[in-house]
Length: 79
Image 1 (tube, helix red, strand yellow):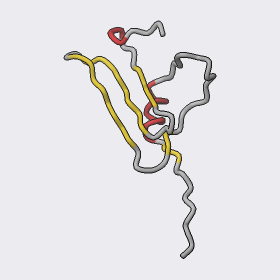
Image 2: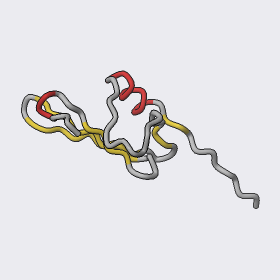
Image 3: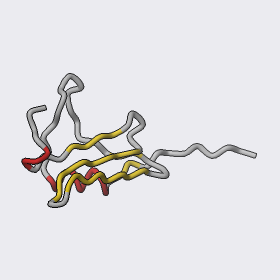
Image 4: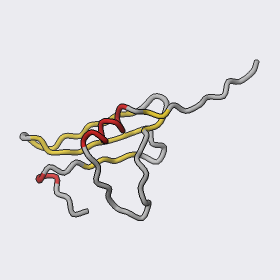
């Protein structure tokens, strides 16, 4: 990754289950970490090559990832 956080780079980390996202970026007073955990559903991530170590996306795409969540289908148990 040749991006630098002091140059405006934003780093996004998503867990394997895609229900927790952490966003790291620099503001005027220092580093900020945003943490979002979904009670249900998964973050809808863009397609990417798993051999790639980084992915460049636009700010609007990041906001769509945070706001647009895939709902997991639940199977109801019969009583």
